[in-house]
Length: 220
Image (cartoon, rainbow, N blue to C red; front, side):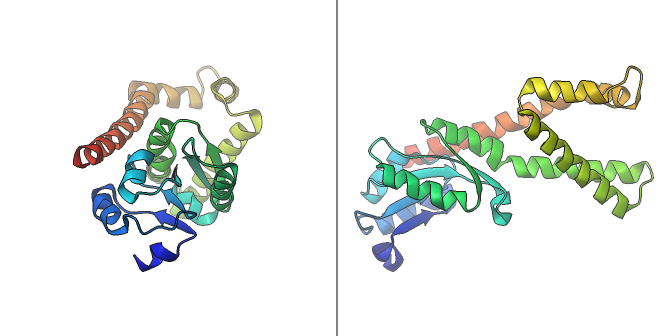
């Protein structure tokens, strides 16, 4: 409460399950000119505005690579926010990596499932690649270097080419020879429903985001 009274920018970074208690403690304490920046999964801007009795509330979803300034943050501000408010948010988030402003906060819910959850999914994939490389006989230090270089280099190629689905498909075609090693590997991934499983994982994270938001609404 003491911090809130003196805040210029107040970041709400608590678990959704703890939000109600925090809003109750801070209700009416935040200076009118202060900006509140929420990174709470599922929590609508309107709910936070009402809970704090404060209108200057922005909402964002960063991800773990923000720790090394390579992050991606999707964010939004309410209709009543000023250009100055938006630029303040952009400046803060830009320090941590890339940022994208969206005009509808439902996109922040989707970002929670994609870029918020994404680092864990990518790390799980990289871990599986490590283990597969060791399984076929690479030493652990060679596996680590080759897998990371492959993942990072491929991502940079996709970024440089424009990064949409067409360019990704072209990249796959370029490295896939008929009857070759890549063709054989891709067939195994298809049989294992790799793409469908990944889609289901992202969809499950999105569904959970909406569940958390709905639970917060029910408590209001």
